[in-house]
Length: 419
Image 1 (cartoon, one colour):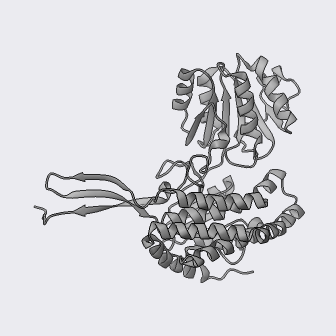
Image 2: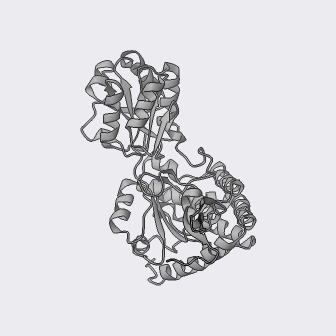
Image 3: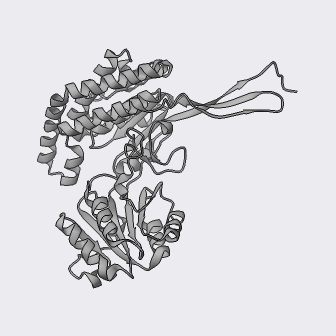
């Protein structure tokens, strides 16, 4: 289907009107709309899963990887998780009912910095159809409208989710135009969204490195970037061995296709001879393959030798890069050289070493004695997330309700005039 050249302008104008209505809705009304959308998702679970089967069939015909198939796949349990996420968002405090700062000047002027909706958000994402429900719920609660452009591989799933969500919103009295999706898979809709200055207030890309780079290069709209998740777990010399084994197995293999999955294992040289063979055995039993440096291969010779590019690769599958390092400083240097400033973890019982590692890296999320897969808005108590921001402006880490608001100033006087 060819792109409708007028669709984006009309959709954005409708979204602008809807955002004004949503921003003025009482918190209770926004929460009712989210719960109605959750109920409709549950009621239409079988339809959503059936539409997902169509997407999976096309994906399988194209020969996609198992990890990406897992990102695309929906089950009744995953639909229920989407619905539960909307319920969780509804239960969170109102992000708009916040005074961020309040002070009075010597001349008597009272100045308040108060939370404000962004307006119209454009969300461009790949593969994971549940992202659409999460984004819709977060944007609505934060008083904004959203235009969702999912990947072509999830077109039917995303359309079914959108239909369920908007049906719930309308049933609760919220405008359907608060959540919209393009009517076709044509990539020209992405270009139109990126060039929609004055129509869309913020673009949020969520996907692979290629998508994010394109958005950053072409966007004429402010971007809240989500970079690749080249995450590291560093097993320090003072790590508890059993804890390290549990964390590394989970961080890599719980779900290999998510951006919070560990892609590189760093292990201290003093414990590598005893601990690395155990870690390799644990991971290999779960189906993991390896790309290892020379020092790691000297300990476990059957590991595949890493190439120069492997430590810069976000695998998103059952492959783990492995390097042996001499202490915290070398681990920090490796992360700063090869990482994407997403999520990096240290496993250690030494608090001084943990602080040194955390202070030495620039990652949006730094973890101590925990799996990198906890980098998730739901796990942070945000209800859901619209992405993981790795830039340095406005927001970093999981982007939830607070991060989807901006602010303005309200100044109250008693007749003051400026001399």
